Length: 375
Image (cartoon, rainbow, N blue to C red; front, side, top):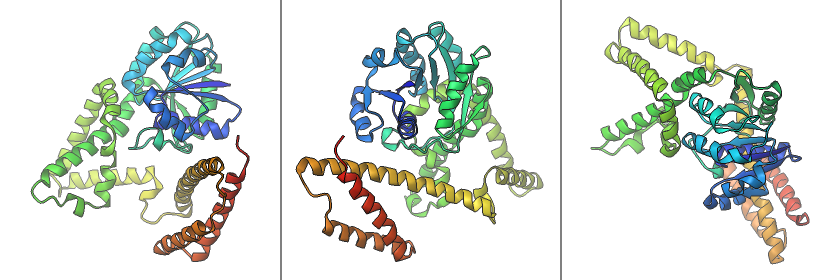
């Protein structure tokens, strides 16, 4: 299997890292802007990097092409790739809106090329390959939008990719997808920005927002840190459903603000609470055992992601040591490090022996990795 990823930011880079670990037998080429290649090399997403000028060398013999550019660049990118796409290749995207690109793709791609719209329900307020995470898609829904005449084998190829990413594939009509995304993704982004904007305006006199903002405000405005350049295309390609969602939200907010203490507002509040508690275990007042375990699973993924980044850095340090003919082990550095880690652990309420055992294992494996012969 050969796959080409066009656009190696957060999503494309995370796909590449996941495949690097789970499908080492695949050949994965990553194409991006020339100025982004050093960051891709630093992130070690793939040994096969290039720009769109190299598309012919990689796309022509690819079985699967994933376009992970911003939504507004999708059509142009498909047009540039079209001359190199061979019959039978599966092409997909990761855009947050689906109807427009699904309407445009057939006119942009040559006969025999199978385009299937895709949208992983995973992301971050951070962007770029620097934020890429091979576990980004684990346990997440991955929406797929095939055409009525999409060959089953093409859809199965893409489903196989999604399952390799540890995500759950769900097929959906593109128009329905966009209506749902307007409410659950695009409108929340606008609300976060609007809340941050209005809070800053209301705080202009006292400048106490940073001091007094609590967890709830910070959680609700987390999305406001997202890059407008990425969102501009999403807002443009889904403007109608977003306006409809915003109008419904305005009606609901008006119901609550004009009658905060009446029975209708109380009923709406109660109904919203019941529905929300059914959607996620983290909101339950007294989490059950399985709910607590799901929280543990989430923290374990975060720990393993951090450990993976640490091992990559240790491997790079090992290459530098070999180049400089420096010894692999540094006893004084390890002593200082263990002292700092014990101090950090103590501040978090962790047993000292747990911290010692954990980092003893990590250091042992780091030394082994740095002692391995160079590739």
